[in-house]
Image (tube, rainbow, N blue to C red):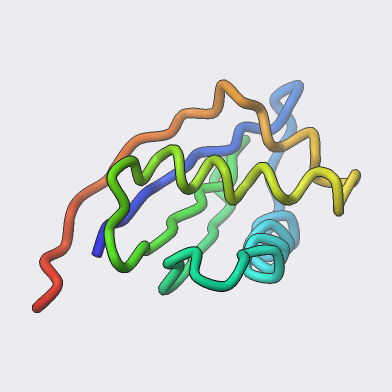
Length: 101
């Protein structure tokens, strides 16, 4: 399993709300294609950003690219949130979790 954290920063530095975080999570889940390998998604609003954590199983070769590709599925379907999905978002792999954990 691979865990990837993406930080989506509010354009203009406004505050991120809990409802924004929940909506991002719901939209991401609803637009994940079958076989995408998404085991779990969590979201949380902190100051001017939404933290999106995606648990991928099995771990792909490039987990950050996989998550960014999944996030890119949201804008065409939700113009209200498309401004959150900046291609320059801070994406990094948080940690690896062994399959037997």
